Length: 548
Image (tube, rainbow, N blue to C red; front, side, top):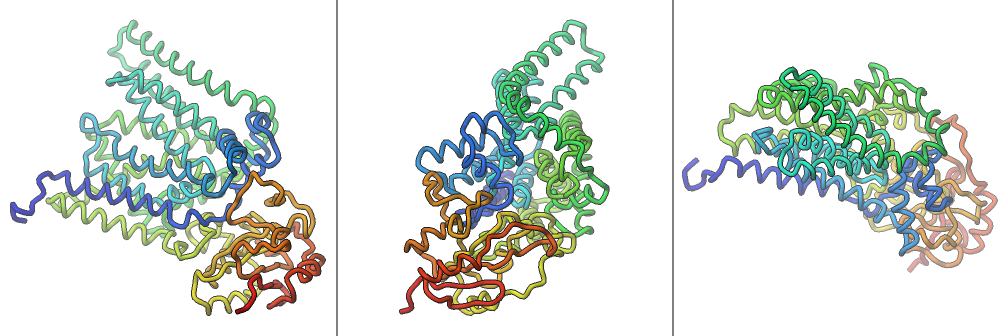
Protein backbone atom coordinates (compact mmCIF):
# COMPACT_ATOMS: atom_id res chain seq x y z
CA UNK A 1 0.00 0.00 0.00
CA UNK A 2 1.51 3.33 -1.03
CA UNK A 3 1.91 6.25 1.34
CA UNK A 4 -0.82 8.09 -0.57
CA UNK A 5 -3.50 5.56 0.28
CA UNK A 6 -2.21 4.19 3.58
CA UNK A 7 -4.61 5.13 6.45
CA UNK A 8 -3.31 7.92 8.61
CA UNK A 9 -4.11 5.89 11.69
CA UNK A 10 -4.33 2.12 12.19
CA UNK A 11 -7.54 2.82 14.11
CA UNK A 12 -9.35 4.28 11.09
CA UNK A 13 -10.36 0.96 9.43
CA UNK A 14 -11.72 -0.26 12.74
CA UNK A 15 -13.65 2.98 13.28
CA UNK A 16 -15.24 2.47 9.86
CA UNK A 17 -16.14 -1.13 10.71
CA UNK A 18 -17.68 -0.05 14.03
CA UNK A 19 -19.72 2.68 12.34
CA UNK A 20 -21.00 0.34 9.65
CA UNK A 21 -21.81 -2.30 12.30
CA UNK A 22 -23.94 0.16 14.26
CA UNK A 23 -25.81 1.15 11.09
CA UNK A 24 -26.35 -2.50 10.11
CA UNK A 25 -27.42 -3.40 13.65
CA UNK A 26 -29.91 -0.53 13.64
CA UNK A 27 -31.34 -1.66 10.32
CA UNK A 28 -31.69 -5.28 11.47
CA UNK A 29 -33.60 -4.14 14.54
CA UNK A 30 -35.86 -1.80 12.58
CA UNK A 31 -36.54 -3.92 9.47
CA UNK A 32 -40.32 -4.51 9.13
CA UNK A 33 -40.80 -3.56 12.78
CA UNK A 34 -43.72 -1.16 12.08
CA UNK A 35 -45.84 -4.01 10.68
CA UNK A 36 -45.13 -6.72 13.27
CA UNK A 37 -48.12 -8.39 14.94
CA UNK A 38 -47.99 -8.66 18.74
CA UNK A 39 -47.56 -12.30 19.77
CA UNK A 40 -47.20 -14.53 22.82
CA UNK A 41 -45.65 -12.77 25.84
CA UNK A 42 -46.05 -9.32 24.27
CA UNK A 43 -49.70 -9.58 25.29
CA UNK A 44 -48.90 -9.87 29.02
CA UNK A 45 -48.60 -6.11 29.40
CA UNK A 46 -51.44 -5.41 26.97
CA UNK A 47 -53.87 -7.58 28.94
CA UNK A 48 -52.81 -5.82 32.15
CA UNK A 49 -53.41 -2.40 30.59
CA UNK A 50 -56.88 -3.48 29.46
CA UNK A 51 -57.97 -5.02 32.76
CA UNK A 52 -56.17 -3.06 35.49
CA UNK A 53 -55.49 0.44 36.77
CA UNK A 54 -52.08 1.94 37.56
CA UNK A 55 -52.12 0.77 41.19
CA UNK A 56 -52.99 -2.77 40.17
CA UNK A 57 -50.12 -2.75 37.65
CA UNK A 58 -47.58 -1.37 40.13
CA UNK A 59 -48.47 -3.74 42.97
CA UNK A 60 -48.62 -7.06 41.13
CA UNK A 61 -46.35 -9.20 38.99
CA UNK A 62 -49.49 -10.70 37.50
CA UNK A 63 -50.18 -14.26 36.56
CA UNK A 64 -48.16 -13.83 33.37
CA UNK A 65 -45.30 -11.59 34.53
CA UNK A 66 -45.97 -8.24 32.95
CA UNK A 67 -43.02 -5.86 33.33
CA UNK A 68 -44.29 -3.28 35.83
CA UNK A 69 -42.62 -0.04 34.61
CA UNK A 70 -43.02 -0.99 30.94
CA UNK A 71 -46.73 -1.69 31.50
CA UNK A 72 -47.16 1.60 33.37
CA UNK A 73 -45.60 3.32 30.36
CA UNK A 74 -48.04 1.54 28.06
CA UNK A 75 -50.97 2.58 30.24
CA UNK A 76 -49.81 6.19 30.20
CA UNK A 77 -49.67 6.06 26.39
CA UNK A 78 -53.14 4.52 26.27
CA UNK A 79 -54.48 7.42 28.33
CA UNK A 80 -52.64 10.10 26.34
CA UNK A 81 -53.23 9.69 22.65
CA UNK A 82 -53.56 5.97 22.22
CA UNK A 83 -51.40 2.86 22.39
CA UNK A 84 -50.02 1.42 19.13
CA UNK A 85 -47.65 -1.38 18.25
CA UNK A 86 -45.02 1.14 17.19
CA UNK A 87 -44.91 3.07 20.46
CA UNK A 88 -44.82 -0.22 22.35
CA UNK A 89 -41.70 -1.22 20.41
CA UNK A 90 -39.83 2.10 20.35
CA UNK A 91 -38.18 1.90 23.83
CA UNK A 92 -36.82 -1.56 23.05
CA UNK A 93 -35.57 -0.53 19.61
CA UNK A 94 -33.77 2.46 21.09
CA UNK A 95 -32.30 0.29 23.86
CA UNK A 96 -31.00 -2.25 21.36
CA UNK A 97 -29.20 0.45 19.38
CA UNK A 98 -28.00 2.18 22.57
CA UNK A 99 -26.32 -1.05 23.66
CA UNK A 100 -24.23 -1.01 20.48
CA UNK A 101 -23.16 2.58 21.08
CA UNK A 102 -22.45 1.90 24.77
CA UNK A 103 -20.22 -1.03 23.91
CA UNK A 104 -18.33 1.04 21.36
CA UNK A 105 -17.59 3.61 24.09
CA UNK A 106 -16.76 1.21 26.94
CA UNK A 107 -13.53 -0.32 28.29
CA UNK A 108 -11.43 2.34 26.58
CA UNK A 109 -9.30 3.32 29.59
CA UNK A 110 -5.80 2.10 30.39
CA UNK A 111 -5.74 -0.24 27.41
CA UNK A 112 -8.57 -2.47 28.69
CA UNK A 113 -9.58 -3.14 25.09
CA UNK A 114 -8.15 -2.03 21.77
CA UNK A 115 -10.06 -0.12 19.08
CA UNK A 116 -9.94 -3.30 16.99
CA UNK A 117 -11.48 -5.36 19.80
CA UNK A 118 -14.26 -2.83 20.35
CA UNK A 119 -15.06 -2.70 16.64
CA UNK A 120 -15.15 -6.50 16.38
CA UNK A 121 -17.24 -6.62 19.56
CA UNK A 122 -19.80 -4.13 18.26
CA UNK A 123 -19.98 -6.06 14.99
CA UNK A 124 -20.83 -9.31 16.76
CA UNK A 125 -23.43 -7.59 18.93
CA UNK A 126 -25.00 -5.92 15.90
CA UNK A 127 -25.72 -9.26 14.20
CA UNK A 128 -26.59 -11.29 17.32
CA UNK A 129 -29.94 -12.99 16.59
CA UNK A 130 -31.01 -12.92 20.25
CA UNK A 131 -30.23 -9.23 20.68
CA UNK A 132 -31.88 -8.35 17.37
CA UNK A 133 -35.01 -10.32 18.28
CA UNK A 134 -35.39 -8.82 21.74
CA UNK A 135 -34.83 -5.31 20.39
CA UNK A 136 -37.90 -5.93 18.20
CA UNK A 137 -40.13 -7.36 20.93
CA UNK A 138 -42.42 -5.48 23.32
CA UNK A 139 -40.86 -7.16 26.34
CA UNK A 140 -38.27 -5.68 28.73
CA UNK A 141 -35.22 -7.73 27.72
CA UNK A 142 -33.58 -5.19 25.40
CA UNK A 143 -33.91 -2.58 28.13
CA UNK A 144 -32.56 -4.87 30.83
CA UNK A 145 -29.67 -5.95 28.61
CA UNK A 146 -28.60 -2.32 28.27
CA UNK A 147 -29.14 -1.50 31.94
CA UNK A 148 -27.34 -4.55 33.31
CA UNK A 149 -24.38 -3.83 31.03
CA UNK A 150 -24.28 -0.27 32.34
CA UNK A 151 -24.57 -1.48 35.94
CA UNK A 152 -21.75 -4.03 35.62
CA UNK A 153 -19.41 -1.51 33.96
CA UNK A 154 -20.36 1.34 36.31
CA UNK A 155 -19.78 -0.71 39.45
CA UNK A 156 -16.22 -1.49 38.40
CA UNK A 157 -15.53 2.15 37.59
CA UNK A 158 -16.94 3.19 40.96
CA UNK A 159 -14.95 0.59 42.89
CA UNK A 160 -11.69 1.54 41.22
CA UNK A 161 -12.34 5.18 42.24
CA UNK A 162 -11.97 6.41 38.72
CA UNK A 163 -12.71 9.99 37.79
CA UNK A 164 -16.27 10.97 38.73
CA UNK A 165 -16.63 7.80 40.75
CA UNK A 166 -19.66 9.24 42.58
CA UNK A 167 -21.43 9.56 39.24
CA UNK A 168 -20.47 5.97 38.40
CA UNK A 169 -21.94 4.84 41.73
CA UNK A 170 -25.16 6.73 41.07
CA UNK A 171 -25.30 5.27 37.56
CA UNK A 172 -24.87 1.77 38.95
CA UNK A 173 -27.65 2.23 41.52
CA UNK A 174 -30.04 3.70 38.95
CA UNK A 175 -29.34 1.00 36.35
CA UNK A 176 -29.68 -1.80 38.90
CA UNK A 177 -32.93 -0.37 40.24
CA UNK A 178 -34.49 0.08 36.81
CA UNK A 179 -33.39 -3.31 35.46
CA UNK A 180 -34.56 -5.08 38.62
CA UNK A 181 -37.90 -3.31 38.48
CA UNK A 182 -38.28 -4.16 34.80
CA UNK A 183 -37.49 -7.83 35.50
CA UNK A 184 -36.16 -9.25 38.80
CA UNK A 185 -34.30 -11.99 36.90
CA UNK A 186 -31.55 -9.40 36.28
CA UNK A 187 -30.69 -9.01 39.98
CA UNK A 188 -28.11 -11.84 40.13
CA UNK A 189 -26.12 -10.03 37.45
CA UNK A 190 -26.31 -6.59 39.05
CA UNK A 191 -25.85 -7.60 42.71
CA UNK A 192 -23.00 -10.09 42.32
CA UNK A 193 -20.43 -7.27 41.88
CA UNK A 194 -20.81 -6.67 45.65
CA UNK A 195 -19.82 -10.28 46.32
CA UNK A 196 -16.85 -10.14 43.94
CA UNK A 197 -15.31 -6.92 45.19
CA UNK A 198 -16.30 -7.63 48.79
CA UNK A 199 -14.38 -10.89 48.62
CA UNK A 200 -11.43 -9.14 47.02
CA UNK A 201 -11.43 -6.56 49.80
CA UNK A 202 -11.39 -9.28 52.46
CA UNK A 203 -8.76 -11.44 50.74
CA UNK A 204 -6.42 -8.70 49.60
CA UNK A 205 -3.72 -9.07 52.22
CA UNK A 206 -2.00 -5.74 51.55
CA UNK A 207 -4.95 -3.78 52.88
CA UNK A 208 -4.66 -2.27 56.35
CA UNK A 209 -7.59 -2.63 58.77
CA UNK A 210 -8.45 1.02 58.14
CA UNK A 211 -8.60 0.67 54.35
CA UNK A 212 -10.53 -2.58 54.67
CA UNK A 213 -13.14 -0.92 56.88
CA UNK A 214 -13.36 2.01 54.46
CA UNK A 215 -13.83 -0.35 51.50
CA UNK A 216 -16.55 -2.33 53.24
CA UNK A 217 -18.24 0.89 54.33
CA UNK A 218 -18.34 2.02 50.68
CA UNK A 219 -19.91 -1.28 49.67
CA UNK A 220 -22.49 -1.11 52.43
CA UNK A 221 -23.45 2.46 51.58
CA UNK A 222 -23.96 1.80 47.87
CA UNK A 223 -25.64 -1.53 48.62
CA UNK A 224 -28.00 0.09 51.12
CA UNK A 225 -29.06 2.77 48.65
CA UNK A 226 -29.60 0.20 45.91
CA UNK A 227 -31.54 -2.25 48.07
CA UNK A 228 -33.71 0.51 49.50
CA UNK A 229 -34.73 1.62 46.01
CA UNK A 230 -35.42 -1.95 44.93
CA UNK A 231 -37.43 -2.63 48.07
CA UNK A 232 -39.62 0.41 47.45
CA UNK A 233 -40.45 -0.76 43.92
CA UNK A 234 -40.56 -4.54 44.37
CA UNK A 235 -41.83 -4.74 47.94
CA UNK A 236 -45.56 -4.14 47.20
CA UNK A 237 -45.80 -6.69 44.35
CA UNK A 238 -43.77 -9.22 46.35
CA UNK A 239 -46.13 -8.87 49.30
CA UNK A 240 -49.28 -8.99 47.17
CA UNK A 241 -48.12 -11.72 44.79
CA UNK A 242 -45.70 -13.73 46.87
CA UNK A 243 -47.54 -17.01 46.38
CA UNK A 244 -47.55 -16.62 42.59
CA UNK A 245 -43.96 -15.38 42.55
CA UNK A 246 -42.70 -18.25 44.71
CA UNK A 247 -44.74 -20.81 42.79
CA UNK A 248 -42.76 -20.07 39.64
CA UNK A 249 -39.49 -21.15 41.27
CA UNK A 250 -38.50 -24.78 41.73
CA UNK A 251 -40.60 -25.82 38.75
CA UNK A 252 -38.21 -26.86 35.98
CA UNK A 253 -34.50 -27.64 35.75
CA UNK A 254 -31.83 -27.14 33.13
CA UNK A 255 -30.21 -30.23 31.66
CA UNK A 256 -26.97 -30.79 29.81
CA UNK A 257 -28.96 -30.88 26.58
CA UNK A 258 -30.80 -27.63 27.35
CA UNK A 259 -27.55 -25.90 28.35
CA UNK A 260 -25.98 -27.01 25.08
CA UNK A 261 -28.93 -25.74 23.05
CA UNK A 262 -28.98 -22.50 25.06
CA UNK A 263 -25.32 -22.00 24.16
CA UNK A 264 -26.19 -22.46 20.49
CA UNK A 265 -28.82 -19.74 20.81
CA UNK A 266 -26.47 -17.36 22.63
CA UNK A 267 -24.00 -17.66 19.76
CA UNK A 268 -26.89 -17.38 17.29
CA UNK A 269 -26.30 -20.57 15.32
CA UNK A 270 -27.61 -24.11 14.87
CA UNK A 271 -24.51 -26.01 13.68
CA UNK A 272 -22.52 -27.97 16.32
CA UNK A 273 -19.17 -27.77 14.44
CA UNK A 274 -19.49 -24.00 14.22
CA UNK A 275 -20.31 -23.87 17.94
CA UNK A 276 -17.08 -25.74 18.68
CA UNK A 277 -15.12 -23.15 16.68
CA UNK A 278 -16.82 -20.21 18.42
CA UNK A 279 -16.32 -21.71 21.87
CA UNK A 280 -12.64 -22.30 21.10
CA UNK A 281 -12.25 -18.72 19.89
CA UNK A 282 -13.97 -17.44 23.03
CA UNK A 283 -11.59 -19.44 25.19
CA UNK A 284 -8.68 -18.00 23.23
CA UNK A 285 -10.14 -14.54 23.79
CA UNK A 286 -10.38 -15.10 27.53
CA UNK A 287 -6.70 -16.06 27.62
CA UNK A 288 -5.72 -13.09 25.49
CA UNK A 289 -7.64 -10.62 27.64
CA UNK A 290 -6.39 -12.27 30.84
CA UNK A 291 -2.84 -11.34 29.91
CA UNK A 292 -3.80 -7.64 29.86
CA UNK A 293 -6.70 -7.27 32.31
CA UNK A 294 -6.93 -10.09 34.84
CA UNK A 295 -9.28 -8.21 37.11
CA UNK A 296 -11.67 -7.47 34.25
CA UNK A 297 -11.78 -11.10 33.15
CA UNK A 298 -12.18 -12.42 36.71
CA UNK A 299 -14.89 -9.85 37.43
CA UNK A 300 -16.89 -10.56 34.28
CA UNK A 301 -16.63 -14.35 34.63
CA UNK A 302 -17.63 -14.22 38.31
CA UNK A 303 -20.68 -12.07 37.62
CA UNK A 304 -21.90 -13.82 34.47
CA UNK A 305 -21.21 -17.44 35.43
CA UNK A 306 -22.36 -16.81 38.99
CA UNK A 307 -25.63 -15.35 37.76
CA UNK A 308 -26.13 -18.22 35.30
CA UNK A 309 -25.68 -20.75 38.11
CA UNK A 310 -27.94 -18.81 40.49
CA UNK A 311 -30.73 -18.63 37.90
CA UNK A 312 -30.39 -22.34 37.14
CA UNK A 313 -30.51 -23.22 40.85
CA UNK A 314 -33.72 -21.20 41.27
CA UNK A 315 -35.33 -23.54 38.69
CA UNK A 316 -37.82 -21.02 37.29
CA UNK A 317 -40.71 -22.22 35.18
CA UNK A 318 -39.84 -23.20 31.58
CA UNK A 319 -36.09 -22.76 32.11
CA UNK A 320 -35.45 -26.13 30.47
CA UNK A 321 -36.57 -24.54 27.20
CA UNK A 322 -33.42 -23.15 25.54
CA UNK A 323 -35.10 -19.92 24.46
CA UNK A 324 -36.14 -19.15 28.04
CA UNK A 325 -32.72 -19.76 29.62
CA UNK A 326 -31.08 -17.84 26.76
CA UNK A 327 -33.18 -14.74 27.34
CA UNK A 328 -32.51 -14.90 31.07
CA UNK A 329 -28.80 -14.96 30.23
CA UNK A 330 -28.95 -11.99 27.85
CA UNK A 331 -26.98 -9.77 30.29
CA UNK A 332 -24.06 -12.21 29.90
CA UNK A 333 -24.19 -12.17 26.10
CA UNK A 334 -22.28 -8.90 25.51
CA UNK A 335 -19.37 -10.19 27.57
CA UNK A 336 -19.43 -13.59 25.85
CA UNK A 337 -19.16 -11.78 22.53
CA UNK A 338 -16.31 -9.65 23.88
CA UNK A 339 -14.32 -12.82 24.49
CA UNK A 340 -15.25 -14.09 21.01
CA UNK A 341 -14.11 -10.80 19.46
CA UNK A 342 -10.76 -11.01 21.27
CA UNK A 343 -10.28 -14.59 20.09
CA UNK A 344 -11.14 -13.72 16.50
CA UNK A 345 -8.64 -10.88 16.51
CA UNK A 346 -5.93 -13.19 17.80
CA UNK A 347 -6.41 -15.26 14.64
CA UNK A 348 -6.26 -12.17 12.42
CA UNK A 349 -2.96 -10.84 13.71
CA UNK A 350 -1.06 -12.55 10.90
CA UNK A 351 -2.78 -10.09 8.55
CA UNK A 352 -0.42 -7.36 9.65
CA UNK A 353 -2.23 -4.42 8.11
CA UNK A 354 -5.20 -3.10 10.12
CA UNK A 355 -7.22 -2.53 6.95
CA UNK A 356 -6.97 -6.20 5.95
CA UNK A 357 -7.78 -7.29 9.51
CA UNK A 358 -10.86 -5.08 9.54
CA UNK A 359 -12.04 -6.39 6.18
CA UNK A 360 -11.50 -9.98 7.28
CA UNK A 361 -13.42 -9.41 10.50
CA UNK A 362 -16.34 -7.84 8.65
CA UNK A 363 -16.40 -10.73 6.17
CA UNK A 364 -16.30 -13.32 8.97
CA UNK A 365 -19.18 -11.55 10.73
CA UNK A 366 -21.21 -11.53 7.51
CA UNK A 367 -20.67 -15.29 7.13
CA UNK A 368 -21.66 -15.82 10.76
CA UNK A 369 -24.87 -13.87 10.17
CA UNK A 370 -25.58 -15.96 7.08
CA UNK A 371 -25.12 -19.16 9.10
CA UNK A 372 -27.66 -17.93 11.66
CA UNK A 373 -31.46 -17.90 11.61
CA UNK A 374 -32.20 -14.42 10.28
CA UNK A 375 -31.78 -15.11 6.55
CA UNK A 376 -34.55 -17.71 6.86
CA UNK A 377 -37.16 -15.34 8.25
CA UNK A 378 -36.19 -11.94 6.87
CA UNK A 379 -38.34 -12.44 3.79
CA UNK A 380 -40.80 -9.65 3.02
CA UNK A 381 -43.39 -9.37 4.23
CA UNK A 382 -42.99 -11.38 7.41
CA UNK A 383 -45.15 -9.83 10.13
CA UNK A 384 -44.53 -12.70 12.57
CA UNK A 385 -40.77 -12.67 13.14
CA UNK A 386 -41.35 -13.20 16.85
CA UNK A 387 -43.25 -16.44 16.25
CA UNK A 388 -41.67 -19.36 18.07
CA UNK A 389 -41.31 -21.16 14.77
CA UNK A 390 -38.32 -18.84 14.35
CA UNK A 391 -37.32 -18.07 17.95
CA UNK A 392 -37.78 -21.20 20.08
CA UNK A 393 -34.70 -22.99 18.69
CA UNK A 394 -32.56 -22.00 15.73
CA UNK A 395 -32.40 -25.59 14.47
CA UNK A 396 -35.75 -26.63 12.91
CA UNK A 397 -34.87 -30.26 13.65
CA UNK A 398 -35.10 -29.46 17.39
CA UNK A 399 -38.00 -26.99 17.30
CA UNK A 400 -41.39 -28.44 18.34
CA UNK A 401 -43.13 -25.46 16.72
CA UNK A 402 -41.83 -26.86 13.45
CA UNK A 403 -41.92 -30.58 14.15
CA UNK A 404 -45.38 -30.83 15.71
CA UNK A 405 -47.47 -28.62 13.43
CA UNK A 406 -50.77 -29.92 12.05
CA UNK A 407 -50.52 -31.84 8.83
CA UNK A 408 -53.67 -30.33 7.34
CA UNK A 409 -53.13 -29.16 3.76
CA UNK A 410 -52.59 -25.44 3.24
CA UNK A 411 -55.83 -23.92 1.88
CA UNK A 412 -55.59 -23.45 -1.86
CA UNK A 413 -56.69 -19.84 -1.43
CA UNK A 414 -53.23 -18.90 -0.15
CA UNK A 415 -51.57 -20.58 -3.11
CA UNK A 416 -53.85 -18.61 -5.43
CA UNK A 417 -52.73 -15.40 -3.75
CA UNK A 418 -49.12 -16.42 -4.35
CA UNK A 419 -49.82 -16.03 -8.08
CA UNK A 420 -50.52 -12.34 -7.52
CA UNK A 421 -47.69 -9.80 -7.18
CA UNK A 422 -46.37 -9.89 -3.58
CA UNK A 423 -47.23 -7.09 -1.17
CA UNK A 424 -50.19 -5.91 -3.25
CA UNK A 425 -53.04 -7.33 -1.16
CA UNK A 426 -54.09 -7.26 2.49
CA UNK A 427 -55.91 -10.07 4.30
CA UNK A 428 -57.82 -9.87 7.56
CA UNK A 429 -57.44 -13.21 9.34
CA UNK A 430 -60.04 -14.07 12.00
CA UNK A 431 -60.46 -15.44 14.60
CA UNK A 432 -56.99 -15.95 16.02
CA UNK A 433 -54.99 -17.05 19.04
CA UNK A 434 -52.02 -15.02 20.22
CA UNK A 435 -49.94 -18.10 21.14
CA UNK A 436 -47.48 -19.42 18.58
CA UNK A 437 -48.90 -22.90 19.31
CA UNK A 438 -52.15 -21.96 17.60
CA UNK A 439 -51.01 -19.39 15.05
CA UNK A 440 -50.53 -20.63 11.47
CA UNK A 441 -50.12 -17.24 9.82
CA UNK A 442 -46.31 -17.28 9.45
CA UNK A 443 -46.62 -20.50 7.48
CA UNK A 444 -49.36 -19.07 5.27
CA UNK A 445 -47.67 -15.69 4.76
CA UNK A 446 -44.45 -17.39 3.66
CA UNK A 447 -46.53 -18.85 0.81
CA UNK A 448 -48.80 -15.98 -0.23
CA UNK A 449 -46.41 -13.04 0.51
CA UNK A 450 -49.28 -10.59 1.10
CA UNK A 451 -49.93 -8.32 4.08
CA UNK A 452 -51.99 -9.55 7.03
CA UNK A 453 -54.11 -7.95 9.71
CA UNK A 454 -55.65 -9.84 12.62
CA UNK A 455 -59.44 -9.69 12.96
CA UNK A 456 -60.85 -9.55 16.50
CA UNK A 457 -64.30 -11.16 16.51
CA UNK A 458 -65.68 -9.77 19.79
CA UNK A 459 -68.66 -9.47 20.05
CA UNK A 460 -69.82 -10.75 16.64
CA UNK A 461 -68.73 -14.34 17.30
CA UNK A 462 -69.01 -14.19 21.10
CA UNK A 463 -67.27 -12.14 23.76
CA UNK A 464 -63.57 -12.94 24.16
CA UNK A 465 -60.99 -11.18 26.33
CA UNK A 466 -57.83 -13.24 25.70
CA UNK A 467 -55.97 -11.70 22.78
CA UNK A 468 -59.00 -9.57 22.03
CA UNK A 469 -60.68 -6.35 23.10
CA UNK A 470 -63.82 -4.57 21.83
CA UNK A 471 -63.78 -1.79 19.25
CA UNK A 472 -65.25 0.53 21.88
CA UNK A 473 -61.89 0.54 23.71
CA UNK A 474 -60.55 3.60 21.88
CA UNK A 475 -57.42 3.91 23.99
CA UNK A 476 -55.91 1.06 21.96
CA UNK A 477 -55.16 2.11 18.40
CA UNK A 478 -53.43 -0.96 17.05
CA UNK A 479 -52.68 -0.90 13.36
CA UNK A 480 -52.45 -4.64 12.79
CA UNK A 481 -55.44 -5.58 15.02
CA UNK A 482 -58.84 -4.74 13.54
CA UNK A 483 -62.44 -5.44 14.53
CA UNK A 484 -64.98 -7.64 12.76
CA UNK A 485 -67.77 -5.49 14.19
CA UNK A 486 -66.30 -2.45 12.41
CA UNK A 487 -65.93 -4.41 9.16
CA UNK A 488 -69.61 -5.33 9.25
CA UNK A 489 -70.37 -1.65 9.84
CA UNK A 490 -68.64 -0.82 6.55
CA UNK A 491 -65.01 -0.19 7.50
CA UNK A 492 -62.60 -2.24 5.38
CA UNK A 493 -59.30 -1.10 6.96
CA UNK A 494 -57.92 -1.00 3.42
CA UNK A 495 -58.00 -4.79 3.22
CA UNK A 496 -58.99 -6.90 0.24
CA UNK A 497 -60.24 -10.09 1.90
CA UNK A 498 -61.68 -11.28 5.19
CA UNK A 499 -60.59 -14.84 5.93
CA UNK A 500 -62.69 -16.63 8.57
CA UNK A 501 -61.04 -19.72 10.06
CA UNK A 502 -63.59 -22.39 10.93
CA UNK A 503 -61.38 -24.33 13.33
CA UNK A 504 -58.23 -23.86 15.38
CA UNK A 505 -54.76 -24.69 14.06
CA UNK A 506 -53.11 -26.55 16.94
CA UNK A 507 -49.51 -27.41 17.83
CA UNK A 508 -49.48 -30.22 18.79
CA UNK A 509 -52.59 -31.30 16.86
CA UNK A 510 -54.20 -32.95 19.91
CA UNK A 511 -53.93 -29.80 22.10
CA UNK A 512 -57.05 -28.34 23.69
CA UNK A 513 -57.86 -24.78 22.64
CA UNK A 514 -60.88 -22.52 22.96
CA UNK A 515 -62.23 -21.41 19.57
CA UNK A 516 -65.33 -19.39 18.64
CA UNK A 517 -68.24 -21.01 16.87
CA UNK A 518 -67.45 -19.40 13.54
CA UNK A 519 -70.14 -21.29 11.66
CA UNK A 520 -72.78 -19.69 13.86
CA UNK A 521 -71.69 -16.14 12.97
CA UNK A 522 -71.16 -16.68 9.24
CA UNK A 523 -74.82 -15.86 8.58
CA UNK A 524 -74.48 -12.32 9.91
CA UNK A 525 -71.20 -11.89 8.01
CA UNK A 526 -72.76 -13.04 4.73
CA UNK A 527 -75.70 -10.72 5.30
CA UNK A 528 -73.32 -7.75 5.31
CA UNK A 529 -70.56 -8.81 2.94
CA UNK A 530 -72.35 -11.07 0.50
CA UNK A 531 -71.53 -14.62 -0.54
CA UNK A 532 -67.99 -15.86 0.09
CA UNK A 533 -65.54 -15.98 -2.80
CA UNK A 534 -63.77 -19.08 -1.48
CA UNK A 535 -64.71 -21.87 0.89
CA UNK A 536 -63.19 -25.16 2.03
CA UNK A 537 -63.29 -27.14 5.26
CA UNK A 538 -60.79 -24.78 6.92
CA UNK A 539 -61.57 -21.22 5.81
CA UNK A 540 -64.33 -19.07 4.36
CA UNK A 541 -63.18 -15.97 2.43
CA UNK A 542 -65.14 -12.77 1.77
CA UNK A 543 -64.14 -9.99 -0.62
CA UNK A 544 -64.05 -6.56 0.99
CA UNK A 545 -63.56 -4.57 -2.21
CA UNK A 546 -65.97 -4.47 -5.08
CA UNK A 547 -64.51 -5.85 -8.34
CA UNK A 548 -63.69 -3.26 -10.97
